[in-house]
Length: 519
Image 1 (spheres, rainbow, N blue to C red):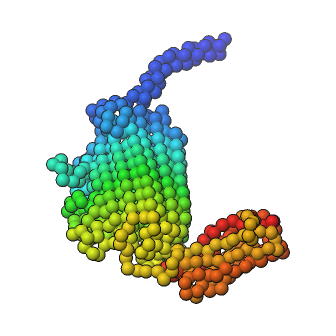
Image 2 (image 1 turned 90 degrees about the horizontal axis):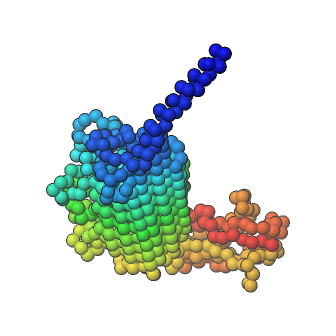
Image 3 (image 1 turned 90 degrees about the vertical axis):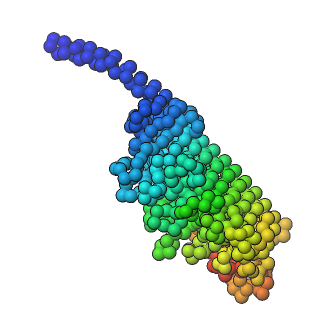
């Protein structure tokens, strides 16, 4: 009996507890669906909703933040406002005081998404006016996504302080916009990023952050964003695995973006800049970066990039190193009067292991500041460094379908970009064992041979063939390669070529030139 009475009393207490707590739980849940500014520090409530409810839905008004917003390390968390004019997040900070926004003299990201796959940030504004460069702190990115797949950043407005206006504060003038690191399949769409990252980094000679930065993050989609009055508007990079970078930014797509540089701001510490910067290199002492392959850069409009304060510098499209098999079409790059290049190809510059080659460049406009006071005759619409191979559709002095009226004087002795190729026997889309393939190449460095390597789909080599030397016109004449039944079983084989590019002299290895069907 005592046991029975104790059990019954416990049940009553449990029931009362449920009745007492249920309304509070419901209230917490509903408040996270309709947060409103408190007039004080709103960061704790927003962070609590993200951690406990997996979402924070913000109403209209200005939310003051005295500390960063940090996503919990779980999937599917959402931070959403009513629109990027109605809902405002404003970090508060005064120079010289202790703050979670500053660690060891460097600003911290305002919003951090780490190991939070499927996170969504959308429909609010970040006002960064109070995070001032003249406080002396180094910059950071406003939104940082790290090791988080399938994250969406949609319809945000990220603004610093506009130089030249009466209310200018230097807020976030040395900070960046959105950064994805080791985070595959990100979607960055419909955002506005303005008036940040236009000054030199504190203690540096150039801006340290970009409007949008994709670093070792595969298949990112950067669509229909506006980046304005920012020195370096957009970058896609692969950095070294030796320094913690684990992903590969290949197969990313950049379409329909408006990119406006900061060359005409004329602030005392303004930085020269570039519109789209692509690189797969960084440390000369390591050189293990993966190349950037199969990028699509299409339908973007870039202008006002170039040097700062009347000094020549900067470029529109800059392929620094390691960009391969990518597509560039229907873009417009029109620089300020100080823009040294509309486009430049630097290939193996800074990275001997990753030359830039076999990119398709069609129907683009490349305009430097040539002829204007900042440039005079020193600027060019297109520049190929000596170590940069000609590309498909754009070569030294040959614009083809692109618009460009001036080139740097380096010229190629070859009449075509470097490429090897094969042909099946006449009338066939396969080769039988015992028949021969026709192998040839063009655009090769004269007096050098091309090596063709046949590999199984698992990567193991079956056969190799070294051609005769290229002639004075950079052509490797057609040669027949017998498909030996003793070495080739029926199946499919990948064919690669290794050769010295005729325009640059750079060694190109593992150039994938097709798949062979052997029967």
